[in-house]
Amino acid sequence: MYAVIRIGNQQFSVQKGQTFLSQKTDNPVGVEFEAQVHLLAQENRVHIGTPTVNGAKVILKVLENVKGKKIRGFKYKKRKNYHRTWGHRQQLQKLEVVSITA
Image 1: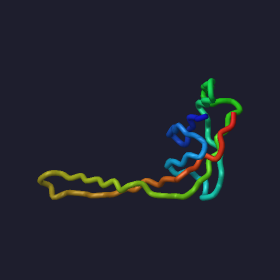
Image 2: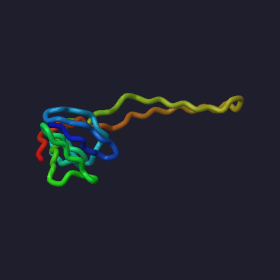
Image 3: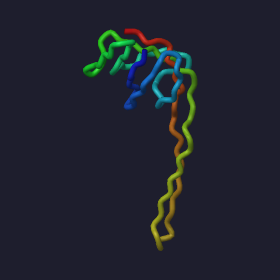
């Protein structure tokens, strides 16, 4: 059994016991929360939501907060002695799928 869930503005295809990285949510480490289910596939059936599947639940547990890889940006203007460098590391959360129920 697998499901397609939505967290923030991203969608993930998940199975029970799977761990994955997602954008950071407001949930602290160790807390379990429920995600929106857009598609639920069982053995021979597929339930597609409009926009979510009624009665379907995917419970996720926050394992840890991590940072993504460093992204470096640079801009300049030629012949004007202007240049600027900046960096960014996205805040992410490592999530585990605890259960998928229909």
